[in-house]
Amino acid sequence: MKIFGSILTSATSGSYNWSEAFDTRHAREGFFTLFYNITGGCTKVVAAYGVTFAYAASTSVTGTFIQSSILIKEGGTSTSGISGDGNNFIGFGSEVAPFIKVGAKATGDAAALTASLVMH
Image 1 (cartoon, helix red, strand yellow):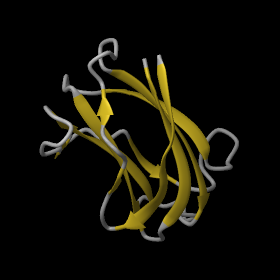
Image 2 (cartoon, one colour):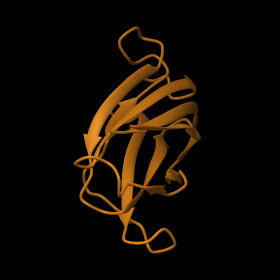
Image 3 (cartoon, helix red, strand yellow):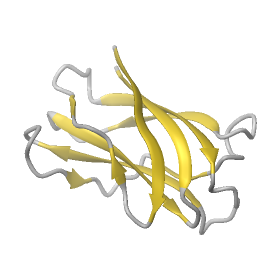
Image 4 (spheres, helix red, strand yellow):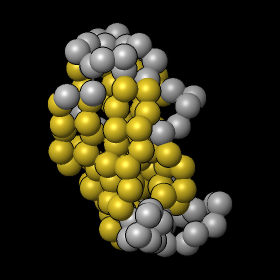
């Protein structure tokens, strides 16, 4: 298992803010956990607002990253999560690719957040 802390710190409205590329060649079966805390912005709890997390994959660290059509999470807000405080985590699998990036974008208000990635 490998932990990458503070991979993202914000989500802007309309386009993804992408993390650095992660070498996933040693991940077992391509499974990951994304821990996130949305600390500001994106407070409206309606379908049209919130933070969306996605990933993109590439065959090389400097190559073209193609966004997956499968999203990691949609609709996260600073009042969502188990305790209603913006903290949550979600597991996801990726298509087999040696490198991935994780991205966050906001619909509506921009959001301040912290996100960490665990590679299993």
